[in-house]
Image (cartoon, rainbow, N blue to C red):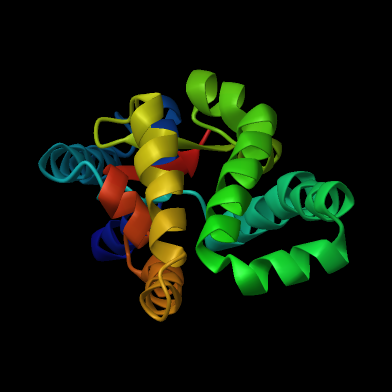
Length: 201
């Protein structure tokens, strides 16, 4: 029976273990109380040794993917539509052929300007984009604090965009960046660059 509860508590979340300690009758079930207490203390030690190790509070893969889709609809589509309306599709194609580097620079400045208009204040105050706020997840630093804007936007968003614009290297980076989310700590390469992670609010 004791071993059964030992394995059971290992599957509990941090919040569930706290609930067990709060409501269990420790006089009637002293062994269960001690098992839950021991497991909770081990979790706290692991968290202190590795601030990225508490996977129970990390945003789920589905939440991060859904947040990305919301951000694309809210930020990505307006950028595409407005760029076409302002520069004109035909003129844009011709300009890109003749001035590829200048076109890439204009597109980056234009898209990031609109992106910041939509998400800048949320990133600065809450570590969230519109999508992350809708899914109730946020960006934090290694100590679970709100990261500085130069990290939450500059290192985490702008630097990867610049890397993505480099031929071939950008493609490889984007592919690896996406695959990194399947690691235990669910941190993409851009999370490692900014030393951030995405957690539940």
